[in-house]
Picture (cartoon, rainbow, N blue to C red):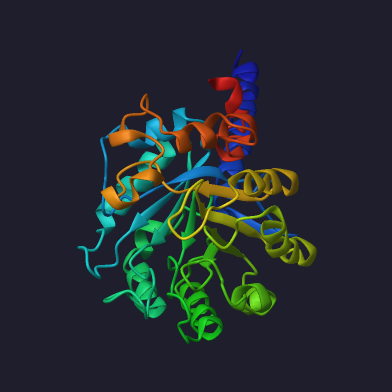
Length: 335
């Protein structure tokens, strides 16, 4: 009996050690850029299928993350404030957001949103200011590499703004790495995110090479300028050919400055395993109410845009798969 008990204790000890070794290895590596795609620590490809949530200007009800998950999303891009124009989103709030994402099995893309339209939008923050803010969140972000993507600065310049996007973005990445943040880092294109002058398009490889972790993903926002399939594929093809990871971090079915081709955007992303995140769940101002997917944060009251993104061809229901860290289920089967 003593021998059998000792053997059983040894077996349980070995099994426990094996289990314990899995979780740290998964969390330590986190989400990585690999051969033009995002992958998780276990090697599974991560294709973002989600929506934007304008947290800093419209938090919504406590159920908002659960509602987004129930719509079929595997990820959510959450807009934070670095303190320019709106009060800064506190470390405690950010920890709560990450907790809500994890509780609802969502990959959390956190973005500093008040850099939007720098040089055109009065009072917009710089990329460097956004990095200053990220560094205040260091303790909250550490050990979240499997769950969180750091989106440095939303739409970091307006139209025709002469800024050093290449140098500013390289410096931002290197400052974050020097602080020990090993997460996948997402960088937005200039010119309201549309990259009107192809600055990101032409220099992405240079920026990627400047990241000592080689773990940068590029983010283009496809609104008015991307109104035909040729314009959508013409832009994204370059990244696919160069095996540079890219996502469409914002897009919509309508826009006041042109008519985005949402069908082409979603079809191309599905064909090439690229991520997309529609703008936005709810809470837009009256002027931009047409961008809401649900009315007044009520998931049962979907707008035309919400129905298109969630239930339409190549939409969330058809294409979203839960991240492997949470189990990797096809979300379409969980309607």
